[in-house]
Length: 123
Image 1 (cartoon, rainbow, N blue to C red):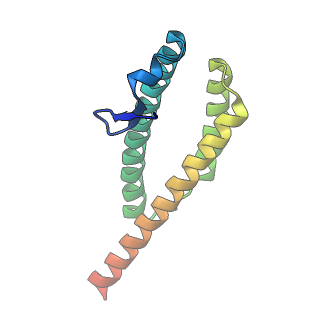
Image 2: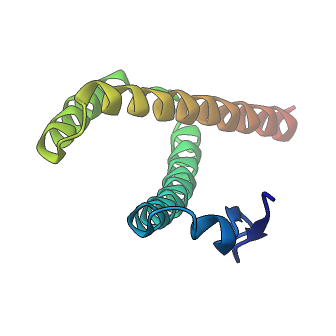
């Protein structure tokens, strides 16, 4: 039987019956991974809330959604942090690239909404 229970966060986890069939060290390691994953999601949500604010600031000052100079700096910074942390720098760069692509898309949408609002006010 493959029973699952829901955590307070609404995620599904294997029942304790299944977990008793696994080595205790594996269960503990997976629990730690689950906690880290939850922390990552909360950190990413906070990061995207902040980048949304940046998008509004850029739109208010008519700045472009992308900032290639900052992005290049961030690539170097993230690769260095990854190396110092024992993480594959290529992975860190790909992860950053994914986030930046999403952020730019959000900033473009924000800028478009400001442009539409300005046309309605001035139109």
